[in-house]
Amino acid sequence: MKILCVIVLYKTSLFDSSSFVGCARHAIREDHFKLFVYDNSPEALHSADELKRMDIEYVSDTSNPGVSKAYNTAARYAWANGYEWLLILDQDTAFQDDGYVKKCKRMAENGQHALYVPLVRKTNGPPLSPLWMEHHIPKSAITEANRAYPMRNVSVINSGMLINTDAFLLAGGYNEDVPLDLADYQFIERLSRMVDDFYLTDYVLFQPFSNDTCSIDSLKTRFKSYCVSAMNYDAGFVSRCEILFTMLKRCVSLIHRTKNIIFLWIMLKAIVKR
Image (cartoon, rainbow, N blue to C red; front, side, top):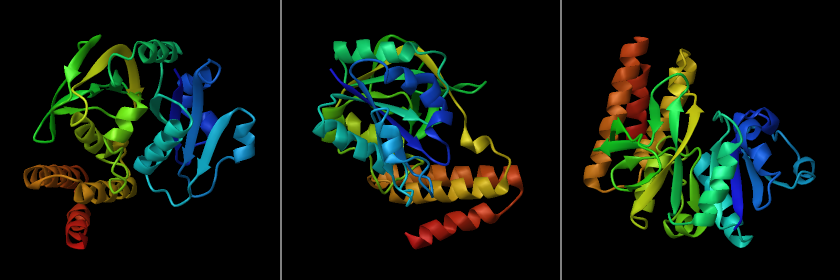
């Protein structure tokens, strides 16, 4: 049993990453774990030689293709090198202690499910994942731990997912045309065609929420990214309409919040470009 931990960096050193400090640095001290770092920063934050001395695999991609390509690259590396499991980590997820590493090892050894996930909460806020979905809109949190749930109509965010490598690849991996926002929604939909259920563990992670920023420039950049992902989402007619409706809802919310109509033009440009 071998587990490949994956961290995608963007303008944050590995050693300053909350996921590395709280989880991955403990994992690489254990047998059966290895760390794969995909750096999307405009300039490489590390050298391959620097991290190789720590037995860390490092890829720098200054084109910043998003998390989907990073996860797919890691999955192919895992398959080629005999890692049966992938542990996906966002760079800024906060871990309480090293307990999740030990839990992941036990779950991988048990292997009754293809996907194990933690409960992820917004920092000082409500649960973010997993959630029940209806028409691609989050409805309620799934919080009863230590049991399996059906894969249909659920949302599970990337960070903390422990997934079987074969299941990841058989599902087709992540949609690289959906680089960041909605990438996890798209992947879970793909996986649900191959896997019946997932298992919710009793471990809690804490995730900052990028939409909490008050900076107009940051909100514009993130909404542009969201629109690209929404327009490239691989779905049938009904699901595509639902995704476009969620984009419109987000646009209206941002206009109301900022009193700035620029978000309407961003959305319209994305639709016309598509």
